[in-house]
Length: 319
Ligand SMILES: NC(=O)c1ccc[n+]([C@@H]2O[C@H](COP(=O)([O-])OP(=O)(O)OC[C@H]3O[C@@H](n4cnc5c(N)ncnc54)[C@H](OP(=O)(O)O)[C@@H]3O)[C@@H](O)[C@H]2O)c1
Image (cartoon, rainbow, N blue to C red; front, side):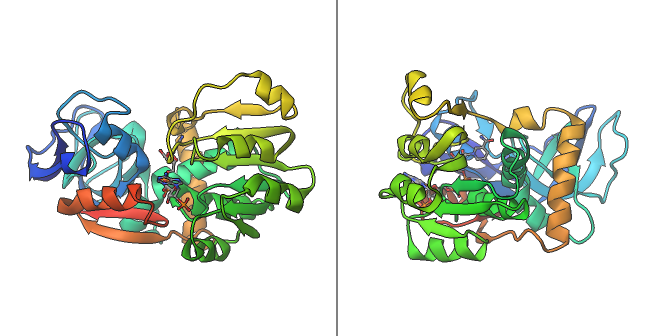
């Protein structure tokens, strides 16, 4: 098969398209023919070594496809099933061995390509809106990078839960997309916390911040007393250390740095979130915006586009 291998960490050129031995499923795993692999910012962190992995490795953690064969001790999944997964390294490839514990079944009415586009970022938007902060009708919610992969899904799910959503974006095109997704107000980053105060009076109940360094201080200043600062990413760079007193000065705020893995830690939790997600997609209540489809061999171009802030919604690699 072909795969994207990282032999030494670095820029997009570190992604090499190469022949690679087919994976062999261990007990409890299935072998999947990959229809599409999802591109995520975490792949950039793996490629550059910000999140270190032992070299060499086949990069990519998300995808969807058709089960070809099952290893020993596999029950309930068989050849021909359409499945999706996240947090399984080796996904930028034509084939991948996936532990059954990480699989989600893709229901009728949802294509494998859509499943590859929505699984990681959709599960993230789900736990952020249902568990990190349970969004309630009437909540004021601030979503940074509202036209991004997680952002467009956060906007829609927060709206499904009855919130008023304020988004931030960098361009007019991104503003249009965020509004189409349901954002009530869309701001540019410059002076956003003052604009949020003008719109809400006392500030928002929760900030979903995947931008990090560039927005962190303004995010704290946008929250109402006892509000929740959900720092789930760092597209602009990591946030420097902070003095906890700052949380008191801004009004007894909560700060969390959550990761998807801890919110899909059990089969039950993964199944609950995936079932909500795919249900909304199948019913047409959650739209999945794929802005780029790249041949697997052009993974480096997908990373360049993502890092250069040129993309909206989701990017997919097609083996
Ligand atoms: N904790 C978790 O469980 C979890 C799960 C998924 C993703 N994440 C993290 O969430 C963040 C967003 O992920 P994503 O896949 O949804 O990406 P994305 O939002 O599709 O892409 C990043 C966006 O961030 C904005 N941005 C602002 N400053 C930037 C900069 N200096 N460089 C690049 N982008 C910048 C850009 O939108 P504008 O041009 O509109 O500003 C850009 O399009 C990443 O840090 C990712 O690792 C975390």
